[in-house]
Structures are given as C-alpha cells and as structure tokens.
Image 1: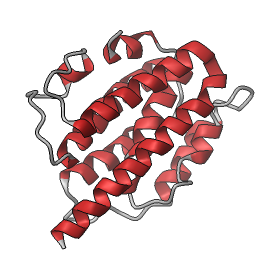
Image 2: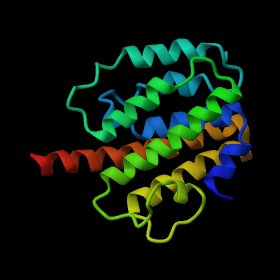
Image 3: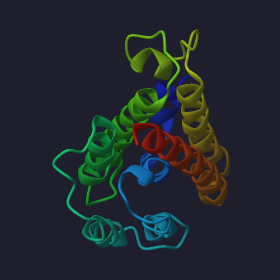
Image 4: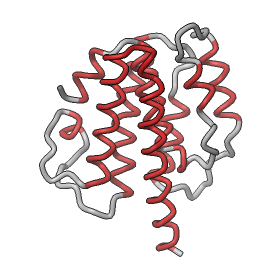
Length: 185
C-alpha cells in the first residue's frame, strides 16, 4: 500500500503520530534537543487527554529560538511543519498536517541527500514509484510507511515502535546535518 493510501486510511491518532514522527525526525534542523517533542508523543498514549495537545504544542514552539534570517530551505521546511501543526487534534486538521509533514520531510531528506533523486517531486515517491530514489529519501519513505503501519496494526500500542523509528531517523538526519556543516566549514 502506498504512503498516500496509508495516510488516507489512518485515524486521528495515527495521523497525529505520523505528522509528529516526520517533525521529530527533522528536529535537528530546529535546534531543539531530543526531548523537544516527547510531551506531544505522550499525549497520543491511550488514556491521555487529547485536549492537552494544543498546550504541549505551544510549549514546543515556545522553547525554540526564532529562525535565523539566513535559514536554508530545509530548516524553513522543518519550522513550517511545527508552525502548521493544528492546535486541536481533530481528524480533518491532523490529516492535512500529516500529509503536509510527509511531503516536507521527504523534501528535506531530498535536499540533504548528496545523491541524486531521479523524480521531479516527492509526490511520485509517496504514490509508490521508487525507481532511482536516493538512499536518504528511500529511508525516510520507509520510516513514514512503518510508522503508519505500526499504528494501524497495533493502535496506541504501536506508539512505542513509532517513536523508536522516529528516533532512529532523527539520529540519521543529525549525522547528515553534522557532515554537511563540516563540509560547508
């Protein structure tokens, strides 16, 4: 099943986790620490108050510095993902956000991957066309699919696995950003 189809079938928790996971993997570009989004992850657990989402989101936004005027495209896209997160965790709002985060995260990985990606846009990747895909984009696409499959198959119990997938992706992106910074000197 393609990523687009998985997003279309996800419930509000799956959609919120999908968008949050994309944002979490791109967190190294935001300048926050690894714990920046943990409270939002906790708010998705069974028994957690869904109304807490908006306040926790505001805390995450408030803990970051204002983006630099010379921020590159990848940093701008990561900040837009956070800024665009809906204050209320309702299915229609998080569906739009999760979809936008999916596109932005794939685009960020495409921008940061030194290997060429043959596709004109990431939309074809999300639809399932993976020929000539660059390694970093391919890995991000697999992570997005895995997160949605974990939540579809295990419900709230899949959150821990989704967080693990996201943490691994964050480490990879942090290494890529670090290498890029060293090369730019």
